Structure formats: structure tokens, C-alpha cells
Amino acid sequence: MKNKTPIKFFAGRATTYLARKIIKSFGAELGKTSVLEFSDGEFQPYYEESVRGCTVFIIQSTFPPSDNLMELLLMIDAAKRASAHEVVAVIPYLGYARQDRKDKPRCAIGAKLVADLLTATGVTRVMTMDLHADQIQGFFNVPVDHLYASTLFVPYIKSLELENLIIAAPDMGGTKRANAYARFLNTEMVICYKLRKKANIVEEIRVIGEVKDKDIVIVDDMIDTAGTICLAANLMKNEGARSIRVVITHPVLSGPAYERIDKSAITEVCVTDSIPLRGHSDKIKVISIADLFADVINKVYKYKSISENFIV
Image (spheres, helix red, strand yellow):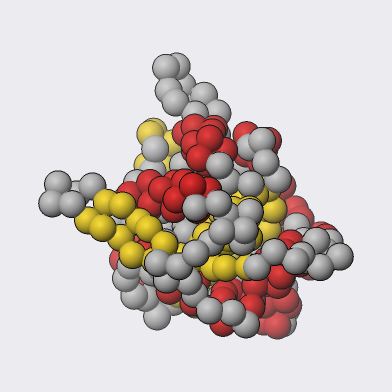
């Protein structure tokens, strides 16, 4: 079945760099928008062309600052008020996803709040990648297409032809993801056990499993300050690992992350372009998700199955 409604693409300012690549791969053009900025910092995005009766795809990752999320919400609201037929939010990186539960008394569940805001604004579908927790899909009352970067990373890891490949989970929460990679790559896995003093500060880390003379690939959904990853890599190197590579979907890379990576035992950090890099490191390799998102957008628009786009 082919969707007869016109399709239009727009991008928030923070993700224009990625939107252009997605739209080029899709074979379309980026719609025209502008943002009116007030002197106090308030802003108002608006469309410079009609979206009446159109299926509108708005591409915007919601990494900090929170203005990126607010801009996406305003763009969705503007499209609905301009009589768009459907509004699909394409959010390669969904911010606040780490706040998926109450892990301490009297705290917010940020991921649920963001889902409620998007739904209340009028979005009809959400497309994202590698959520911090799979169950966040259930926070939405609209369809969620949850893509996995493993679609790109698994073939890349295979292309390295590592002789003694072992997949590693950086913490207990990442074991499901690491196990899926290990299954598709037909190899074993090890687990890093960490004890945190507080957020972003790891007090102790241990490796469960044999890493001596192995080529380690650590997999995770995001890398923030790189503290855990670098500690794990250095520990594995001290325990005799031959090489340590890291495969991460979302390169948040805040604070001392770049410096830590450069000084660590890590051979390479492979990330996607869901978030723009804020610094530089010769160890960081970027794989684009543009073709994957363009393919899934095309299938969603034409009401085709996207099952084949999922590996993990």
C-alpha cells in the first residue's frame, strides 16, 4: 500500500547536519523553517511553506540544552496547528532516557515526562534509536519505531576480522545488549561489574570472565564522561587483553571524555552521528545512521514492514 499524502521533511537546528544526510539518502529536500528569537532567549519556530494534509517528519535529537527538546515540541505543535495529516518525530537520540524509573526517593521519571509532552503536543508516531531502556517505548501512547545501531555495528565488527573476539558489557544493565551482539557474532561475552559513589563517578570496577589474549569489543547505548569505559579498558589491558575497542551508539562525550579516551588503552571508539561530536580524537570513528533512517522512513511512509531493519 502506498501512502498518497504528500511527504515533507523538516529539522530542528541541533540536528540539521544529520537531517540533510537522511533526506539526501531518501531523495527529497529539506523543508524551509525559521526561528524567531526574542531578546530574553524565548524562541518561536515556524514553517515557511504549507504542510496542510502532509505527512511531516521532524528530525531532531534532544541532547542538551533542553532548548532542543522545546524546539521539537514547538515544531510538532506548529505542524498540527497548520493541519498536517500526520506528524512523525524522528529522534535519533532521545534525551532524559536515563531517567526511566525511580531509582531514589522523590525523583522524577524524566523519560515518562518527555513521552507525555510529545504525546500531548500531538505527535502521531516516534522514531528513535537505542533507547537507554527498551521499556521506554511503553511510556508512549503512539507507535514507536525503536531502531538498533547493531544493524550497522555488527557488520562493522565482522569486517575487523578479529581473531579472538569477545563482546563485553560495561555494566550489569548492558548484559542483554552485549549478549545479543555475542549471539549474532557467535562469540562469548564478559561483564564489567561497577560500584558507583554517585552519578558519573565509579568507585570500583571488576571484570567477570577471561580476557587474556582476547580482542575485546565493549558495546553500550551511550558514552558520557567515558569514565566507566576507560576504567574497564585499562583493567582489561592489565589483565592481558590484546586489544580493546568500544562500540557506542550515542556519543554524549561530556566533561573530560575526549581526554580520557586519548589516554586510555582503547584502540578505537566507534560511534554514530546521532549526536554531533563536540571535540576531536583520532581514536573516534563515526558511522552514519542516515541511510538506515532514510530506509525506515520510506517503509513507514509506504506502510511497509520494517522488521528486517532489526538485529538486536
